[in-house]
Every structure is written in C-alpha cells, then in structure tokens.
Amino acid sequence: MNAPFKTAAALGSDAGKQPAPDHQVAVIGLGYIGLPTAALLASYGWSVCGVDVSQKVVDTVNAGGVHIEERDLDALVRDAITAKTLVATTEVPTASFYMIAVPTPLGEGNAPDISYVEAAARAIAPKILPGACVIVESTSPVGTTERVAAIIAEARPDLTVPRGGGTEEADIALAYCPERVLPGRIVNELVHNDRVIGGVTPACAERAAALYTSFVKGDCLTTTARVAETVKLVENSFRDVNIAFANELSMIADTIGVDVWEVIRLANRHPRVNILQPGPGVGGHCIAVDPWFLVAGAPESARLVRTAREVNDHKAVHTENKIRALLEAAPQGEVALLGLAFKPDIDDFRESPALEIAEALAETHGERILVVEPFAEDLPTCLAGTGARLVTLDAALRTAEIVVVLVDHTAFKHLAPEDLAGRLVFDTRGMLRR
Ligand code: SAJ
Image 1 (tube, helix red, strand yellow):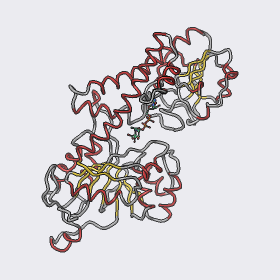
Image 2 (cartoon, protein in one colour; image 1 turned 90 degrees about the horizontal axis):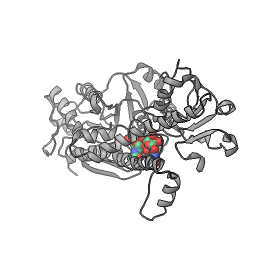
Image 3 (cartoon, rainbow, N blue to C red; image 1 turned 180 degrees about the horizontal axis):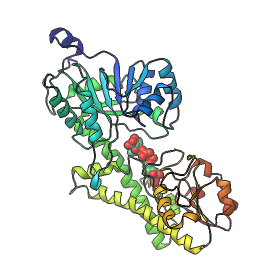
Image 4 (cartoon, protein in one colour; image 1 turned 30 degrees about the vertical axis):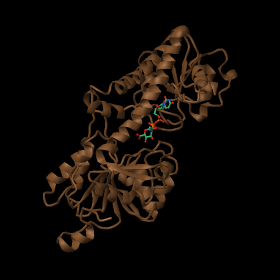
C-alpha cells in the first residue's frame, strides 16, 4: 500500500533530510518486557540497541547476562550478545524503530504515572529521523501515544508528526502495541500470541506492523492507538474482575460455612460457567495495577472495575486476619508461611499479596514466622530484622504448628496429608486438594 507518511528513502532523496537507518531497533527499557523483546528481535535478524537508565543492567546485558529470571531468556540474550546483534547502552541511538517498554506505575491516589514514558519520548526526540517509527508497549492510560506524539512534535518542529484521526503525510510514525505475555512464558508468548497494533493514523499502524510481523507467528491486528490502549487495560481488568468474583465467593463461603473449592469445582461443570481460583489476593505489576488506569479514565462509569480492585485488595486483609486467628489458637506455635511470590514458580515479589501478608504478620509476630520461599536467597528487606526466618520446607515442617500455603509453587506440591498431620493448616490456594 502507499503509506501517507514519507518513507525513509523518499525523504532521503527529495526532502534533503537524512533518513532513519534501516533495520535498527532501539528498545527503551530493558525490564521484563524490553529485554526479552530486544533479544528476540536480535535473533530474528534485527540490529538491536537496548537502552536502560541503569548502568548495572547495561553492563550485565553487554556481558551476555540477565538481571531477571525468565525461562529461555539467558540463552537468547547470550546468543544475541555473542552475535553482536544486541548491544546495550544508556544513550538512545538513532534507529528505524523505537520501542518504549518502561514502567508505568501507580502514582498518588491510584492515578497512572506516565513520567517514564514521557522521559523516553524526550530522549528519543532529538535522535529521531524521518521514516522512523515510535511504538509504545508500556501499559498506559488511554491517550498516552498521543501524548508521546505531542512531546516529539514540540521538541522537533522540523518534523511533521502524525495526529490522532489525521491522514495527512507525516515524517514519522507513532503506534501503541501492548505487551500481553505471561511471566514465566514470555519468550514463547512473544512469538505465538496475537498482537493488537494501534496507529495514531492507519499508516502508522501498518508501519509498526512491519516490525511485529517479522517475528510474531500469531495474528497482527491493526486498529487505532486509543483502541489498542483500551484493549490492554480491558484484558487485565477482565481477569481482575473474574478473580474478584472467585475471591468474593471464598469470603462468602467462609461466612456461610461451605467449602469454596468444592462449590467452584461443581459449578464449573455447568457448560457456561468458568469460575477462576480464589487466592490470598491479586498481585503482580499488571492485574493489580492496570484496572486503575481504566478507572482513572472514567471514574464515574468504572464501578465494577473499581469494586473488583477493592475486593481483591481486601482479600489480602481477610487472609491476614484468618492467619491471626490461627496464631491465637496456637499461642506458642510457629507459623510456616509457604511462598512469597505473587504467583507460583516465579521469583517476582512485586505487589505480592503473600509478601504483604507476611510483612503485616511480622510486625506483630516476627519471632513466630518461618518463611519458606524457594525463589528467595535471602529474606526480602521488608521482613529483615523482624525476627522472621527464611528456612527450607523440611526445616519449617520440623517445628511449625501452623502451616499456611500462600503460593502454590511446584516445590510445595508433594506435601502429603501425613506431612501436615496434627497441625493447623490454611491453604489459601486450594493446592492441597489438587
Ligand atoms: N490469580 C488468582 N486466581 C486465578 C488466577 C490468578 O488469584 O485464578 C492471581 C495470581 O496468583 C496473581 C495474579 O492473579 O497474584 C495475577 O496473575 P496472572 O497469572 O493472572 O497474571 P499476570 O499478572 O502474571 O499476567 C497478566 C496476564 N494478563 C491476562 O491474563 C489477561 C498477561 O497476559 C499480561 O501480559 C500481564 O498480566 C501484563 O503484563 O499485563
């Protein structure tokens, strides 16, 4: 198709402007999404420059190492560094594609903080050449891609920057393409999941799609930037709302005295019912955060989404209170807390309800807490000095009178009824029933 933005070659000859180089990608932010994406692009023949503000991260990657645990990532990075198709730096280079994969945390009052995305846009602006394409991957409130366009337009009056709804020719392209990969399966899902690619204009979406179709085996579906931004928030809100239903059911079941796991197991035998699993609350940097971005965009309308967040946050308090009751029931006993991660078989403790519960309990009962977490070498800082101890599962089972399953790590799944006989047991994940 004829792109309404000017191609690099055209600009190089007829506009007298130097065009963006071909086949070079700059990935801004070498975290859980940026680093796997950068290494994967490198393995698909792109010349990739990974950019991070942390010199330590840059040095680790340039040495062929990784600073995060993720299946298959270490080999991918090592191979790309050895092949010199990936290099890391703290400075944004000139490239044909810029991919922004920086954090978008929650600020005051659960308002989205897009300052890292804005900083990335400011760093890209002086380097960008005609024909280049900027893609935002960070989970963002609706309108963020247009904000990036505005920042670049302000810094570069010499360039024609595309505007929302516009179709006129532009010097650069801008798009939003949300990551949707599951921690623990990132490398596989980067290749196999479908992608939603939203352009500030239709031509921008096509330009960005050229990057994704080079390595994605799923479908690459194009739309507008605002729709793509909303899609991402909706996906994670959908899951949060559904987990909130399961968590609310578990609290209702506690009140009316029925076994929630049995209720869910049997209800799910209905052909159109599929209830998710209750737990100690919802964690991670995505599902526990992103719904607030949707709420911030339409606070009056987003009542169910807000309530789901509140229900899931409250589930952690409910769980903590149930453990406190067990501590009172066995006043001299130690409690073994199994797991601190936000979900099974990962080393990620961000927004983890298990960690939050352990921290709250340690404030009052530190000396009685035995933490078992195969993915931690040391106690997290918030537990250090509280009296809580990090021990092996075997050591915990030697003395603990109370056993609480907070995370259903595979390493705990061999626990048998005889291992727990004579103890007070609270299984927040239903692991022991499976
Ligand atoms: N959880 C439950 N019960 C369940 C399922 C999950 O309590 O039945 C809890 C988990 O224990 C965890 C939290 O929810 O604390 C989130 O875990 P998750 O596995 O549902 O999701 P994440 O945060 O690892 O990844 C999600 C994914 N989004 C969706 O499934 C819609 C992933 O595809 C996204 O890319 C990712 O968020 C992200 O980065 O946004």
